Image (tube, rainbow, N blue to C red; front, side, top):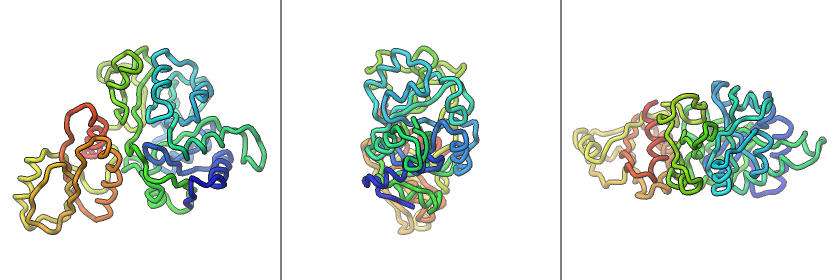
Length: 338
């Protein structure tokens, strides 16, 4: 069931559902999440079951504001606090030391926890309603200080960026708040803050340069500090994959492949910045924006639309190597590895 996320009554109903231990489809600025009370192991278990996700693969906990950190993390290093001040609310997840006995299932049993404060107004309203003081039938249950919310899709598949994507993937019985299409379109940047320096585990809309400027320390890559790296969402080699096989190619290779197939080319979608020639009328052609942020915003919706067209192959022009494209490159490299 899809409810209007701008309706206060829908927010109240969704908060009651979460506080009672149910699942919720939740819009954020990055992608739609499958949300449940992060402090309830039983509620979190439903997320793993619905997604088909291994229970040792940690989830990101979403909080209403920076004050929510104290409910889940035992400490916040100075550089991490600078990142909170600079980028929350927004598409940045920080991995921090976890308070003992808190969110054990959501963190996959690790002694660290990934925390994020989303900027989407519907997500913010829901999180505030979940954390409101009160405990009774009207509230649905005790306050919920944070929700675990991985992307609302089957494990390893393309993340949803509309409420309809969530319903198509997980069914009509799931309560989903509709907050419109996601503005960012790819998952949050993840920075590990448990090892004394910032370590980038997953690129996203917030870039390495922005992280360095905000905290005064250039983030390391996980390859630079390979020992004791926390497990984190969306970092498997193969992930974000549509049903069709994804292949990355430069513009020259794309044009050569189209020329070789000629008029017989079929069951193929092409997503490219470069103008390409084809003799076939049976291809699905979509232009990739020249801007990294615009590409990120539409990327998952485009991949889903190609699957809806029934293509068997998706050929994508390799994104530029510049820093602003790192998040898009990461998602496409993982999609092509599936």
